[in-house]
Length: 339
Image 1 (cartoon, rainbow, N blue to C red):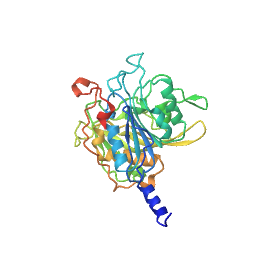
Image 2: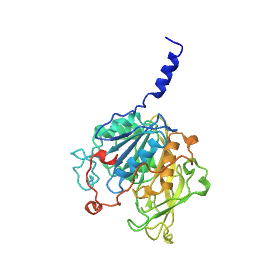
Image 3: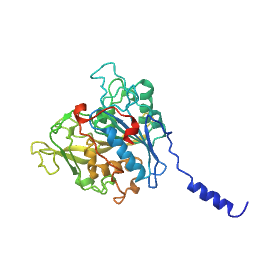
Image 4: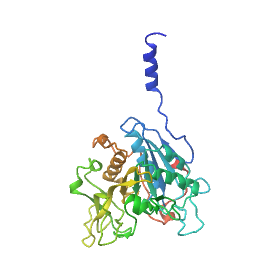
């Protein structure tokens, strides 16, 4: 072997293609990470709700996280019997026979972060087992909007003999009602002054979205003590970015951090965002908060930079929020349609 052979081998190894930890499949989407601080980290994003167009926003975020920040990303969907992404599927609250199907949940085992955007799911036992296993692993958790009422039916997770509630216990709150006016007003994000130096708020200066503010705790109380509010949401008097604040509606927290302690005493970082409709994510500020939160959740806050782009990769034209699927143009599609 010549003296240059070891060097050539090293260069060849460095030039070898990066392999995504999840095999390609027509049942989910994979995005291999490019160069960036997230190189070698794997994020699983779950799009499984019926109202806020997560089937469009989660692939959009995955493309940004992969191409602009280096993370390997996998997007999992709720599929119907024909293998199509189908946001029109009913929930068990509407049909007691419903069981949802999210192929690929076993890949949570290789995830460094799970992003949940689900609503009223009822999963078969073998799939729910992977979710519970992840939640008890001590790995970080990021929940978006309806995730705080993400499951219906038995949730077989206990810590210290107490049944765990995904919204209240893990994320720090559940949907109690629409504090803003549903489908009638919008939300102006207000950064908490005392938290302006928090890594999740680096580079964030403007947040607005056409979804309304959720109430996640009873009137007269506040966020649980273990939660740290980063952004409050002020309901506006309409659905335009320059509409005035509604003087009858106080701002409520829409983004916060907390920790989750597992059965083995491990501590997981948690971030919850109660904004997050497809149109909300047209706000660069909201995209940056979410992407910064992904870094923070994985302990990569020192790598957060306001100079790293959060611009969409390719077109992003989300359909409107709601359940009038025919009017909105929401129809079942294969996962590949969202690539």
